[in-house]
Amino acid sequence: MLGYSALEAGLGYLAVALTAILASGVAQGLVTRLGVKPVLAAGMVLLGVGLLLFTQIAVDGTYAVHLLPGFLLVGVGLGFSFVPVSIAALAGVTPREAGLASGLINTSQQIGGALGVAILTTVATTRFEGLVAGGRDPAAAATDGYSLAFWVGVGFAAASLAATLLLLRRRELETVPAGAAPVG
Image 1: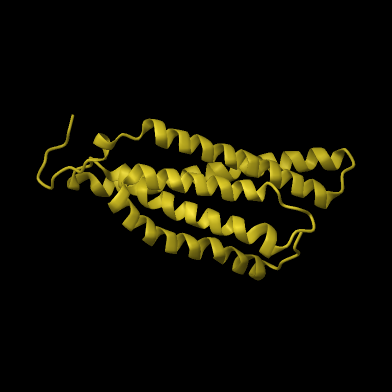
Image 2: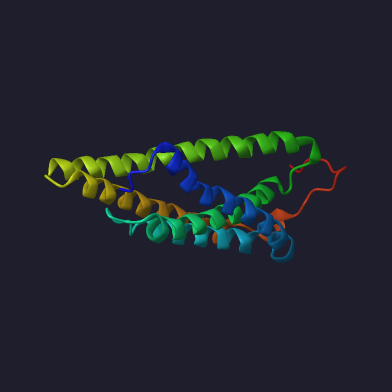
């Protein structure tokens, strides 16, 4: 446990936010050159590897060694995921329905994020409480709880990668011309 204040912890998380912003700009260019699927797949891999690094956190860990590398990978993974997901979700949508589709994407991301945090928090807390009840040191129990939660996050990233590779089709990513009528 690093013992950071709220401000120090917030500053530590800037690595994720700033990296995601920079990676989003890079992802935009890569999607134009490579397409949605490869960039999204790369994002899921990087996100999964970043979370995998977090499974190795230690009670006596340091920011530079145990957190920063994962933060940077997660930031790039998020940047490489948000841009292609938005493009894929809006592909095939008529201009008239673009606002509705965009709102549904944002709502889905908010609900999905909240549900993911709830699941991972439940996993970490349940593991922590079980270990403390068994006599484990609270700091070590908390670290083990977080590690298990990050393993579940790795599973989510792997499932997302599989969905990207198996379900995303190039023909479904074609755009609808501005004057076209809705399909279906």
